[in-house]
Image (cartoon, rainbow, N blue to C red; front, side, top):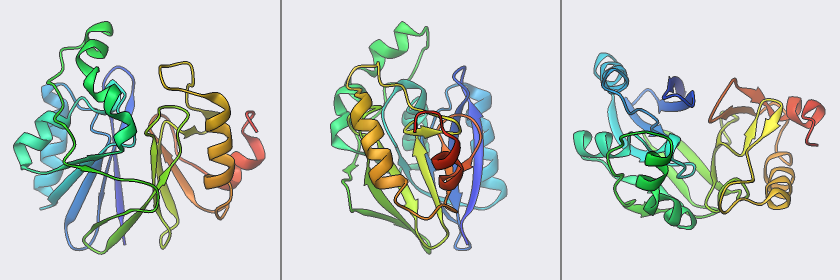
Length: 211
């Protein structure tokens, strides 16, 4: 059984999500930690639960989701994972940080690029990769079919969708991707977004104003 721990970090109130199971292996998705007290929270949780961190996974590479990559990769000697189409965002991360007034350690180049249909495995957990661009070119979703949950980054929110007015964004592409790749799944699948509260596919299909 996969357990889900959500930390809310940085001024954007970004959800940094840690997944772990009975093997004690874990992954961190969208490391938004940037302040010392935020690093300490993650380190303490890993230590207290005797977890083994296997990788950092980026649903996309906007600055509020990658702030902690450098710290965690260097401390735990682990790989980072992303979609190659978001490399331009990663390469401009320093400019993005300065624009918002942040002092951020430059994130490392991902060790592995994933695509639609790939799987990420840790412990007894399998995450399927769905590529859903529109918020960013390389936005991915991490879907656990067995336990019926998905980590969606900024693709879909409770009652909303990700912004499409940023570089590389496209509204129609995002809407189409959500309908085809998310709303086609079981309605009881729990959705964990990059900001705000969790929801379900069924709830968003019936109430989200964008659909």
